[in-house]
Every structure is written in structure tokens, then in C-alpha cells.
Length: 255
Image 1 (cartoon, rainbow, N blue to C red):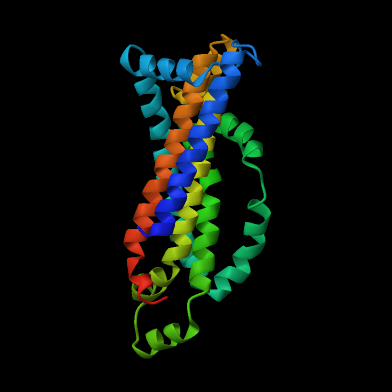
Image 2: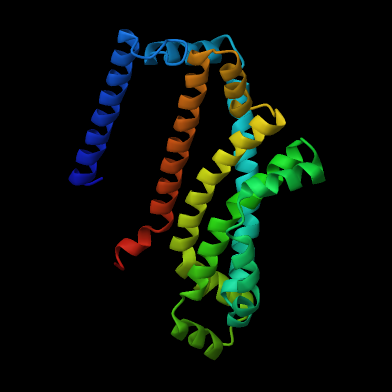
């Protein structure tokens, strides 16, 4: 890790600490009613209590399961379809109109359809999460495969490489940066949709826990759940950054 990166990482933690201190000050001065805004001390105490004496751990696992399963399904489908479409100019020409029709479709419009098809079930949640998370990966994969240097395809044809060999040995390594960027964005979308589905369907997870806390005016529990969701988003982003750095480490010598 270079010195500028360490410097900005320290600055970011200082800013976060200042934000928490300001939050505590506002709560202590009761500028906002404690019913609606607990201090970070109360939120932290609720977080600890939820893990030690409550069911917060099971809620966390429920949300992680919804997010990871939906994201995994979207990853497999998005990368496979994106590879097939992106590696063929003819396929891109035929499929582009359909993609442009479905891509801007808000996921909120799909939720009633999913509920009608699957009911308020885990299957409905996986369908919604996968549908929403597939687009960043699908479009990024198509773009990555379409941007492969044409001369590489000419070399593959001269070597009489099969379609699968071209995809795995030439196109996929070249498109890897776009694919990983799409996977990182899709992971965030999957987390958001997991919470939405848990709230709507009453599924076991942090989303449903946050909703019940809000209805009961348990503000400390509410903020504890929100903080935990933020931690999940931050840690998953760090994991994807680490994976990207490991998988694309060879590019440092190329750039």
C-alpha cells in the first residue's frame, strides 16, 4: 500500500470519527428527540445486545444468504449470457433492442409480478434480487467482450481455436476488468434488494428487523440494523477490491 493511499485512508477514518462525534453531540443536546435519534452509544449497545442476547446474528445470516444467493445466480447468468452475446456481433445486433427494453425497467415494477408468480416466498426474493443484480454484470460483460482487440480474434481464427477456447483464453481475460466492476456494483444492488424483499415479504433478515424496530419506535435497534447493513456493504466492497487486485495484479506490469 503506497503512502498516498495510507494517507487518504487515515483521513477517511478521521472524517468518519468526526461524523460519529457530531452525531453523539446532537444526541446529547437532544436537538432531535431521542425517540427518533439515539446516540451512537445507544446504537452500539443495542448492536452488542442483539448479538449476545438477541437474534441479530440470525438476522444477519438471513440477509447475507439472500444477498449472496441472488448475487451468485445473477453472476452465473449474467457472465454466461454476456459472454455469448458480447463475443458475437450478430448476437449483439439481435439482442440489443430487447436489452434496451429491459435494462431501464425498474426492479420495483417487477416485484408485484414476482409476488404474483411465487408469492411472498424465498423464491420470490431470489428472483427479484437476481433480476436486479444481473444487469450491471450482463452489460459489463457484453462491453468487455465487445471491446476485445479484433486482432486477437484474427489470431484465434488463424490458430483454429474453438469458440470456447477463444472465450476462456482470449476474451475472458481481456474482459475481466469490466466483469469485476460489474460484479462489485451488482453486489451492492443485491444487498439493497435483499432488504427490500425482506421488508415486503416479511422474510427473516435485517430488513424485516429494521421494519419492526421502526414500527415499535425502537430507534436504537433501528440504527443498529442500519449500521450493520452499512458494515456489510463496506466489507463486501473491500472483499471485491481485494479480489480485483489479486486477479488483475498482472495488469500493473502492463499499464
